[in-house]
Amino acid sequence: MAILDFIKKQFIDIIEWTDDSRDTLSYRFPDEDKEIKNGAQLIVRQSQTAQFVYLGQFGDTFGPGKFTLTTDNIPILTNLKSWKYALESPFKADVYYVVTRVFTGIKWGTANPVMMRDNDFGIVRLRAYGTYDFRIVDVRKFLQEVAGTDDHFRLDEFNDAMRSRIVSVFSDALASAHIPALDVAARYGELGEALLPLINPVIGDKYGLSMTSFIVENVSVPPEVEEAIDKRSSMAAVGNLNDYVKFQMAQGLEKGGSGAGGVAAEMAVGMAMAQQMMNQSGGLMAQSTPGIPAPAINAGVAGAAGVPELMTPAQVAQMLGVAESDVFASLDAGDLKGRRIGTQWRVTRAAVDAFLKD
Image (spheres, helix red, strand yellow):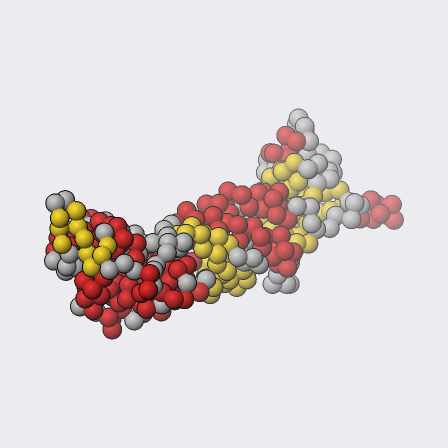
């Protein structure tokens, strides 16, 4: 009897795992170098999936339930072990339990600024952080790409392994979405929901995961974008778009002595805001009128002392930081006073000052 008891202890007849933690993602059943006997019972609880692995190859997968292990319900393992007829002798295999419930409140964040291309501001560096909820949907891919052979894979290890990957996926999704920098910073509460359909296919295909929510709690943007957001919030006080653009031009001229680059940068913000307003005004301007181009950051804006008394439309456009076509449009409409000589226009400095004061 002692010999029979000893032999019996060398085999595994029940395989089960009770998760008493809230941070375990996968757990390898401890076989203690024992073999699984023919007819052994496999118990898989709710929110669990059991995955057999034999010599580094994935075998059969079991969802919740109670199973008697025979050649009938482990066909993949039977094929891997080349059992031609039936499972008659004990066998060795690794059994991984993977938790499939939703894990909530996982933190993410950009350790370094990520770069996005914006039509108004060029390359914008931003930082962001938030939380996400996820679950494991492809057990094999998760074990292969994330957990590996870890016998007890926990959330803290998951965070270490996935932090940079999640940020990379976030950056790629942000670039694919083509969301303006102004909206990224001002409406980040909606950003996560907008990016989720772009993020899920990637992490599902690469890591066997599915995010049930992706929340952006905060976005930090460069000062010029923050300034543009402040100006957008005060649009109601300005009222008329044309008046707002003129106001921006006048501000640029008044600050001419502070350096051309800085003035042009401020005017670029103003032009970007004007473009945003035009795009949002019923879609009409977007269809029929080309947008107001933002001046290049290195475009010079002359101060009062450096402006000639008589200018061409091109000089007026350079001074105001607008397109030459906009100057011609104002001349044709009579808003900006000028003198036409043949096919050429000439504009006085006094006429420009009067235009800005209207």
